[in-house]
Amino acid sequence: MIKKLCFLLLLGLFQLPVAAQSLRSLLAQEQTLIFIHRAALHPEIPENSLTGLKLAIEAGFHMLEIDVMESRDGVLYLLHDRTLGRTTDDEGNISDWDSRDLDQLRLKNTQETLPRFESFLDISRELGIYLMLDVKSAVLEKVINLVSEKNMLDRVVLLTFELERAIEAIGLDKKFLVSVLINSEDEFDEYLCKSADPYQLAVYLNKGAPLELFGRARQLGLPIITDVLGNIDEHAQEDQRVYREFLEKRKPGIIVTDYPQLLKEAIN
Image (cartoon, rainbow, N blue to C red; front, top):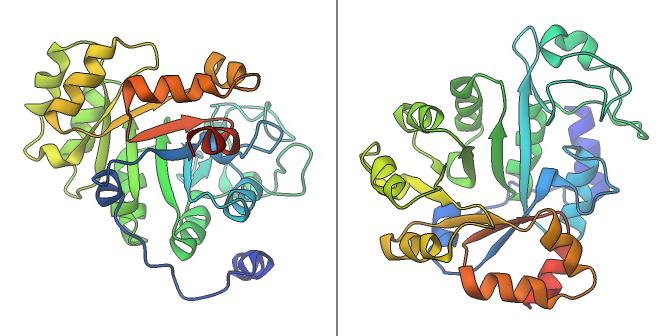
């Protein structure tokens, strides 16, 4: 708790929790919302970190994509890989570590410890942040129950990439926005039939998906999520028109990027 208070004071934002619109209501306004990939304002910033959250807020961004993994004793952490070696100062699978030891690990080239998901949620609630959750090997119901306890259900979207995972998410007793990966026209009906409430669904379309799929999602009134990670982000370093042309053709509600400041500048 002390660390959390210090963090908020450093931001100059120590105040009552920010009143935020639901993510679904923001999407209904037909604007493109920029989510920061792995909560890192640019690739040099430690991914899935409180440092990244702080810098995002300072730069005026309130929408973060993060990854969630689970320790051997069932504690949830922010981590993309199953293994610790790429982003922390130790090695091994996170599922082989207990929380008492994980809490001592440092993110590479920082003094920051590996963030617990609960702590990240607490700060996100206070600062009016919206989260895109990529839940890796963690128990989905545990993740959503914690989100619910923090009164954040209407400010998250859960990524799913397989029908089985989507059905699991839709079947939970708590309602939140679920993103389903669509690769073909037939899959729209398949997913819509699995949900009693289409308002709960968003569509994730790969950036290289046929434009007809983007059009079909719009016809159905489903929010569209896509990304410009990789080549598009890189090409935009030389020519921002790459971003504008991409958006004009696809008109997504949410876009994920490694370069949010450059993307914001391009579309404004």
